[in-house]
Length: 378
Image (cartoon, rainbow, N blue to C red; front, side):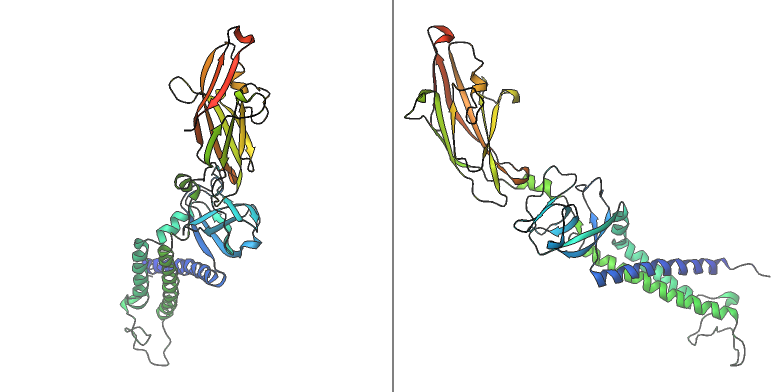
């Protein structure tokens, strides 16, 4: 009795595996068309560790008004870049504030569009597989597999050297209408059906993969925060100026600073950071512990530096710097800086005024010093 046909066994396994996997792909493709599923391949680690690089996620369209903080959504920014980040806050007046789990700050631009893609789930590492299926090599191999399945089902000789004819019967059997059909014919019919199903199931998902490749940049989540840090500038305050008071008690030891608000931008101004420090002999800034700083509300437009006051109240930044000097005489160069602060932790480049001069002269030691604070326009 002849042994089993190993070639036929391999063919049968290929048909079964191809048909099952292809059917699953067809189901996924049908869901994609019916419900708008979008595959997302994460090309950066901005959502790590929850969603590492090269994870594959599925998302569905949703209205922006239905999104709650904590959900992961995918949007297209004003620059045309698709970003997939977690929602930090959802305010109808400003939009959705997004932030990558691994990013230190939120995205610069709140999303104000009417709809987003809500991420349902993600699978780490599966993005590598999806990217491979979208490659030209996968299309070539899929085409070769389809060609082989058709050849094995319809053209290759079966058991006993018979070959499939166009009429559906083995050419080696000239049986009459009343003669029973041999088992090999039934096997070849089922293989033909399996081959057709497998070919269709393979071709359709590969075609879908090819379409994903053409729009992969649109469906790829990227960490935009780091890029925006390098390319976007927060508007600083303008027209920083200083003057000595002309009236009032102790005007010789005070300097008034004033400035104009920064130009309106994408983010809301939340306040200002002001600092003062004594210039080092070489001209550079001192260590951080030698810099006196404070924060002011966004409505503030003026600030008075007082050389004598050292009670730490708002506007008395120089007290900590000059209060510890015991010598009767000094002549110090003071630098004053002003930075605009915005929501989500964004800060503008500082404006610096370097022409403040603090002096103290006395003939009776530190008991009766003559102190003076002055500035000149720069």
